[in-house]
Length: 426
Ligand SMILES: Nc1nc2c(ncn2[C@@H]2O[C@H](COP(=O)(O)OP(=O)(O)OP(=O)(O)O)[C@@H](O)[C@H]2O)c(=O)[nH]1
Ligand SMILES: [Mg+2]
Image 1 (cartoon, protein in one colour):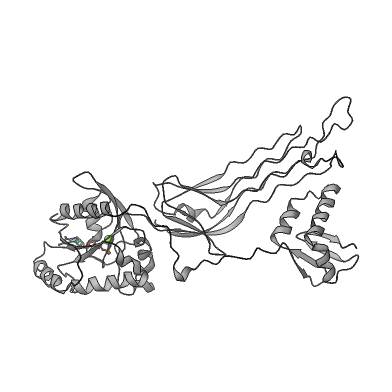
Image 2: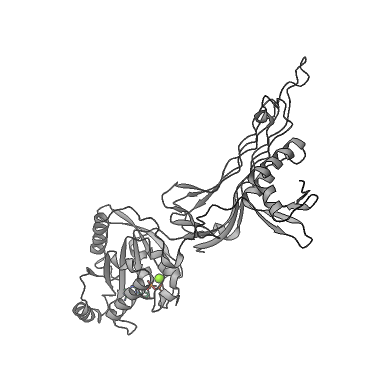
């Protein structure tokens, strides 16, 4: 099964907690702080595996969580960092943040890696809070929460050459003739429902990747037929082979076909027509083909190379492959980075997010929320007075007290933050 679009949820590992510990030495009652830091949580990492060409694995598992860091230990020992959770993706995988639309990674080369969600930093142990004023702090920090996000993964296959054309013109037959790929071939439309890749070796030892794509019909750019399913995968090919049924076995005019398909390509993405295109006049073994080809050439205005072939008698194939390989040699191998299309504009939050916001619950309690304040809260060890005191100092310096007062909070009012409740005190 071929899958080229999926949505998944990823959660990087939380940092391990720092701990409170003290050295125990025989003559020193409180031998100084000795609580180590927590280890870092594991990242979620995507890595390209050139052996893959579908996102099918993500079809079955849609939640991925990396391990949290180990907690700190006594004698100043750090907790262990967690290994990243590495997930293999095919070349041509683009990852976006589902909520913002922002591109997180565009993965092309074999073994290329990208961090999709960063693991949390380990919390600091009490050694790190020691100061001349407080040489024996009873306080440590919890680990930072790992990043969690919903992401959208999209695959645009990377092939040197893409086969485009109406259904049943012989695209799959051509691929099966020139490579070891064995796509389904039949005389009905839309035999090919998803792209097939094949490696083509020319007689002079050159090689390229050829993609057989589902047939295209009028209206494809609007989603008719297999629509975008097809067009998406043309985007990253360097040369387009436009296959025509030159024998007009289904009664259509080959030149009309040519114009119709180019029009669809252009509607989908105007830059597709700027790409080198080679016309493959197929089914030349059939009697009508010669005459149609002459007629086709008369109508063709632009200067495209035309290669008459027959996949049945295998004539013309060798020259066609040389022409393709020559064209590929002429153009840079560098694949162009993903360009944003207007209908998929990226929205970024330009403004730095507010550290916190305040609302009221129906019972009159004040509710604090916001990414930064929630993170600070999660990193606070609520079982220790000193940690709680530090947290309240942090809130004050963020301006939370003033903001609450401004909203009308008075002594004894309830303030909520996540699942925690405390009293406002003047
Ligand atoms: N006579 C003749 N028939 C051919 C030639 N190439 C392909 N065919 C036939 O055309 C029909 C369609 O071939 P496919 O390769 O499945 O066509 P396709 O372009 O992949 O079609 P879709 O996958 O439906 O888009 C099959 O019956 C093939 O045997 C050729 O060179 N000559
Ligand atoms: Mg086919």
